Amino acid sequence: MNPIMRWLRFPGKLFFLGIVLIIMVFPLYWIFITSLKPSKEIFKLPLQYWPSTISFENYINIFKISNFHIYIFNSLIVSLASAFTVLLITTLSAYVLARHKFKGGPQIR
Image (tube, rainbow, N blue to C red; front, top):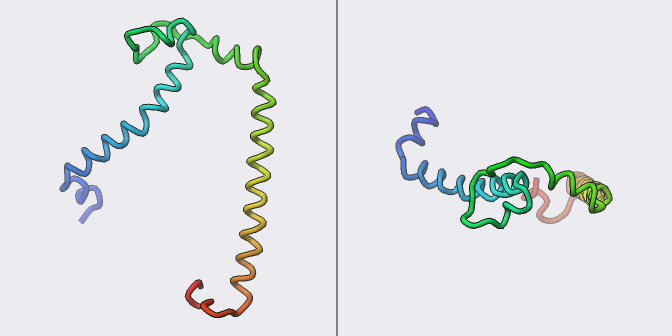
């Protein structure tokens, strides 16, 4: 049977996955939409799910007011160092597991 047809046999699964998808994507949508709102409109009640005026002033202020480029550079250094460390450790571990014989080795391979 076609995998798509198998999913369509269980509409409850599709409904559940749709709800989970909405719950997972909505915070990302909210962050993006809030970043496009002017500062005065962010805390305005009642909540608006779409900004009345789209403004890029928040993105401009990131680079004018704070040291955002330094923060991004620091994050880049930390992530590259951590990725390199993990790659080095796992490569050496994989070599040891592949070349040396030890008790329980066949279960790992």
